[in-house]
Image (cartoon, rainbow, N blue to C red; front, side, top):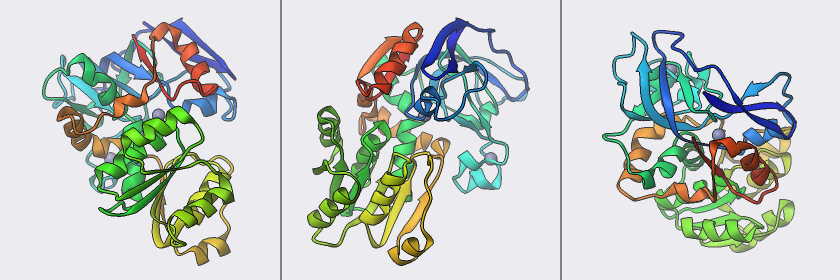
Length: 338
Ligand SMILES: [Zn+2]
Ligand SMILES: [Zn+2]
């Protein structure tokens, strides 16, 4: 088969790789229908996370089951399935609590920007749709593998309730889908923080009522102004830098909730400031698997259309171009078709 391999900073190559095989009886092999580039892949691509050896890359996937190991009982060849970037057993105490991304047996699923993929713990990790989806549904279903589940978790962790004022820090695909999630959960006012016109437009389409273009403390001041000094009931942090985290904490009202899903890079919090902020903090790697059945229903019934975040579609072999476009912020998110 063929797949994307990251060799070093800004060096993605499309190469022949060995076909994946069933290694454990709980594995499945899927034939990719679509895959994509994630904002978090850019940390590796830009060399912020060190890459020490050529590494197959990509972790968002959906496709048709080709083969299953002998211990797999629920997932069957021929089904269309979506899975999370963390494989999980769906049975341990952490999975039962809804935290599949902290499964006691979790395994990272890597190398998904490829024709085929081995998925561990198939019965726990994969969710099959009732029937094969139409081609138009595939981009939206693909987002449930990570980016939409992550936006949803940000809103869920921020305890978004009907009528709430919500602020979203970050206008990448996750932030935009955080806007969509907050709207779906009934938020009354949604303030999207974005400087880019095309992203502002999509944020409005997804339900943003206000746009704030300022960043850092100026952004905080603007939120204060918009909320008559109270600040937001719920804030979604979807970037992972010191500036974005502080902006999020300082935009949350006393007693409010902050859901943070941007993978932190160099973030350090001051105990005193946190103590006096009176803010609930909750975040981490999203339990995308937990939300899959509900989000599949929402996509299937046409209630949400998260696939709109893909503003660039390329054949899989042009994966390097997909990275470049996202790195240079020419694209919000790149869909790849094998
Ligand atoms: Zn991702
Ligand atoms: Zn588990």
